[in-house]
Length: 174
Image (cartoon, rainbow, N blue to C red; front, side, top):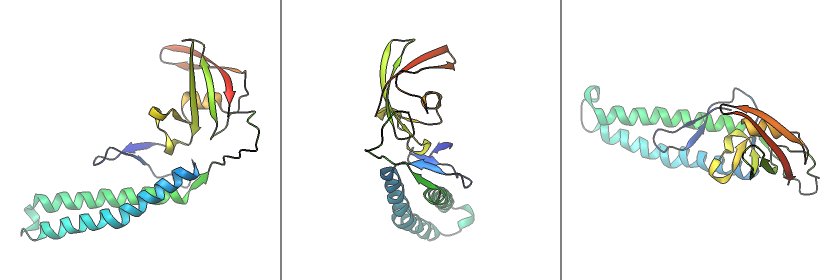
């Protein structure tokens, strides 16, 4: 699923899913619900107050503060709609500890060796809404994520990147 950044906060936002299921961990869904609640209660009130104060400046047709507050309100309502759509279409990634981890799936932690660069990396494969590269959480829709999904320990995968072909060996799946 595509993501965009909020102009105000720089945070990642989901773009509406169009009814498509969104893969997410239970923790990720709780974070989204928390953020949604905050936007609906705290942020809506803050913007309503800004609009009220801006109206007090007089003529709203040439009132920059009023226009900025209305723009912020429109952006906030769009953000709320997107989050509601994401929550509604969320599909929890199960983390069944009893299951064997013989194949890479969404929710797996996978240790791979970049055979081209001779570097070992560990990633958690997550749905696109929870991508956090600095925490080594990569999307199941990313090139590496797509390449390793469904593969077993010991398998070698190749993928084409701008720099050429890259080879990865799956060392461990948890």
